[in-house]
Length: 246
Image (tube, rainbow, N blue to C red; front, top):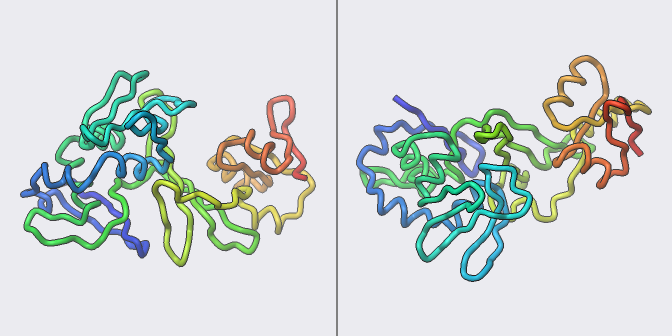
């Protein structure tokens, strides 16, 4: 029996089995999950209004310019480069790589609905367990924000969202990262190590691997290029194996 994992606003997790959702009305769940709100929230992306529709970056291909169109009137979405689209259930099926009953259950839990008319404990976002997550801390070791790797697209690229930490809980969705200072990954470790040479890598996983071998390393959301643009560091490459953090 499948079990779905949801995160509540206070940071607790809730396991909901398919039986809990057995008598859900699909139309009710659809109305409780408007595409214009749910899709940006699930992606952690900002949606811009263009000609009566909303546009955001598509999670199913490398999307440098927002190409996923959301139609609030029809309650549908469409990505022209991918040639895919549908309703909110289809979006969750593709994003979470699940079937329709699982998507129905996830969206129902997100809207605090159950098949018997009772409300479930309030989950902030329906989601299966992520592949991994990386927490960014300030200089004093306090959590500031986290990067969540939910899985992979068909082309192998990562499906990523970000959440900020505020008042003892994680907050995601559209606009969650607005105004949040982007810090170097493992900043407290860098501060404690006090090394002149720091390797700048592309991602947090590579960074953790180097630290496991005693090699100071860091990165930033967006990879090595963002380290250089935000912090003035020279990114490591094949010809530049090490960099000095300024």
